Image: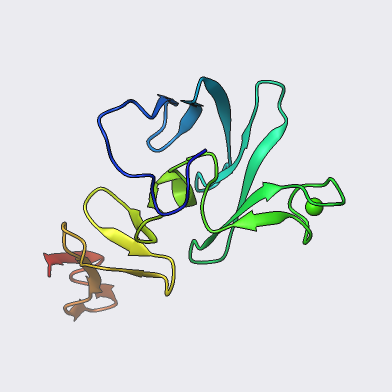
Length: 160
Ligand SMILES: [Ca+2]
């Protein structure tokens, strides 16, 4: 079992993953010789659950609007996942590092890694500017000749 806050880094192989065809799509995690299959939401690729080879949920995940995850570690007394009596935790007890939008969640610092910058679901902000900058697009109507615009749909772009 992997503890929240990280079990420390060493050179030993912790887990192996099978990736899907899409970016940030995961199919399988093998940890401690156990296979966990990823179930993802279709729209933005949030990891919804890990299931075993029989399709039984082993851990579930729900998210608030800006990506704050709740990890469901047990179905609770009603035996139904994703209800209010579920056992929950701050991070995955199975060591799943992929949550909101399928990106890497670092439970030690409670931030999501997005390749070039970090995201904090609380308060829902990036910790740095986008390395690619920002694209400013505006539509400019310069002048009119008669009833027809002389310049129509001209697009101006610039990097900030
Ligand atoms: Ca329940």
